[in-house]
Image (spheres, rainbow, N blue to C red):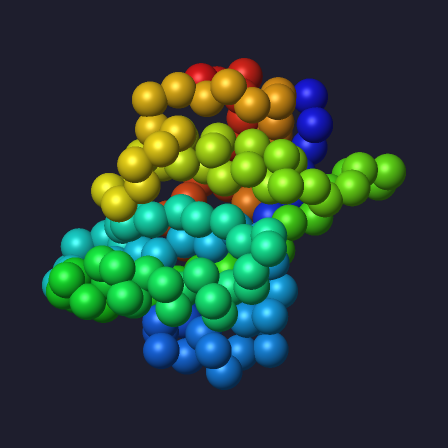
Length: 140
């Protein structure tokens, strides 16, 4: 089983993302909402590989974010791989897929029914918000 660590940063207001130093990085991200006194809820999990966080979050603002009410925030996750592993499109996609399958965010449409990627253990560190500390394919 491959171990992956995600260092989460945030939460940030959606509007602030373009101004952040980290906005030009790539990895995974989650858009969350808090409504009133309810707990923070994950609305969407996405990945960046060819485009940076700034570009991806901007796309969501055009698509559906303006329809949501409440306190919308984004958390940005930098992927840290085990020694000797290299980042790849497929590896980032597997990480995104497992996070989506595990969390079942409202606005994600793919990866919610099954997970078919590599065996992973994801350790979420830092300001992870509502996402579980450890997510592993052994538990699905």
